[in-house]
Length: 370
Image 1 (tube, rainbow, N blue to C red):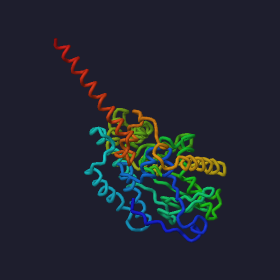
Image 2 (cartoon, rainbow, N blue to C red; image 1 turned 180 degrees about the vertical axis):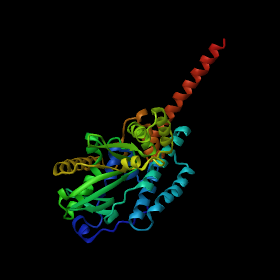
Image 3 (cartoon, helix red, strand yellow; image 1 turned 60 degrees about the horizontal axis):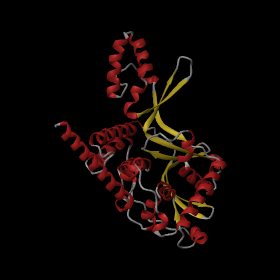
Image 4 (tube, rainbow, N blue to C red; image 1 turned 45 degrees about the horizontal axis):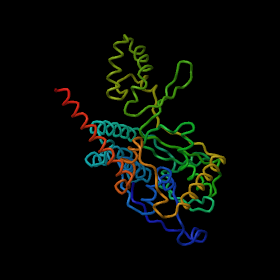
């Protein structure tokens, strides 16, 4: 993401919080809840956090959307810009996985999905404010944040967060857990004088789309799909349409479907079929209310209390040894892992285990050769 300017405290903030207030952010609390020792290393010891493949690739997509809505580039430039910027990632040391084959598969999937998004993105027609900085008061604690996009639809102010991650975890109870950052931003708008019931929060999942098509009973079917294989998602109703429209056998339709899935497009089909299936950006809306805001404030207040109670001594930030199910977070997402004694210990133990397994395998091989 483009480098942000150093924060300058407005006079009203200084008057309320002083010239050197402690400034909180939702990401800061997120670090604490993910790993207390990571918080100690990054926020107290202040070791510089390094980027990972997800922050880098996500920033590329965010910057392109920001420049488009700020009028710096044209619609058709977005896909070209992404291809150009992503090439630098492809030739860098950043990996989606340490496994070479898996990394290539994940990288291609990500690239194809996001390229499809920039080629088919539905433009928000009203004025869009991008990367909008906001201050939020949380029961006397000063928070800051940057909102990806804000626009207005009718009487409603829409807060949009661009996501290049998986959509898993944004339904039901998990959605309520993952919407806290956007709730915090909604609170910030509310504190600027906008009624809470006139604010909506949502995510635009760039790697996904919604497919809308009519059913014979008059209702509309909405199907969610990953962009790089969206045609495969509708192959069954599509096959019926092809058989009916072209008056061909099912096996002939199967051949057409295979080609359509391979090209991931309906190009070449009769316009009646093409026009039947509408693809749209994949938006997921959060649940914003007085109740969810109050729950958020309670949780934030508790987190801040826990952080302040720990102080600055390292002994107060100890954690349990790293388990195998935490390896992905530590190896890929943690920006201070090279300073982490727990991660070094985990790698040492892993190496010892691998050495033992290799030694046992050699012994078994020798015994089999007797």
